[in-house]
Image (cartoon, rainbow, N blue to C red; front, side, top):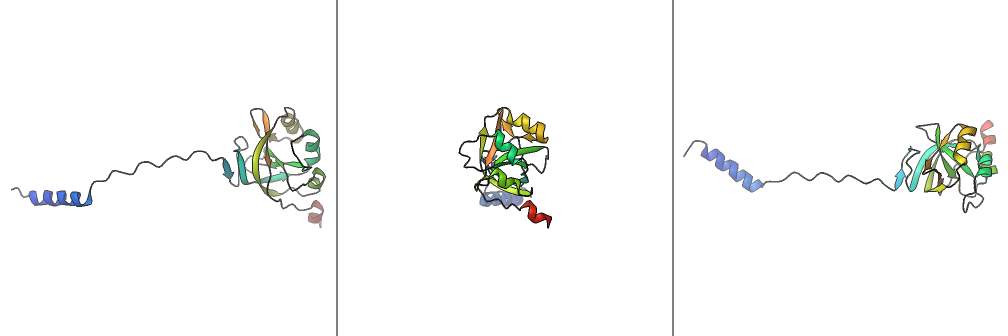
Length: 165
């Protein structure tokens, strides 16, 4: 019997009692969500639905947008453009919801807002180039169609006249 025998016996007993364990398998990589809940966004990669997507609401263009957009079931609601805070030369078209007409939107102060709702597309080939030419902003598009958010949450908009006081 060698002098190392008691050591190896204890080591073997310890391994037997503790057992051998394999390392845990790597965690699964999450798939891209169909919903974005974030303060910022990439205007080129909008998901099927957004929640609390924020940016600066460009409301002064609502009247001109109304003349260029024939959205299905618009219920008289006006559109505005949500400007990305990370890339201020990019924007997403948003239907205001709550039956806010283009005329009402134009009386409100442009401010940072959050929108939530499904992302839809508008088949209007002239809209994006026209908007870029008129306002210097690139609208979000997928497959040549302008993407827009059908906002489902109330917007807290301040009257432009109230702010002047």
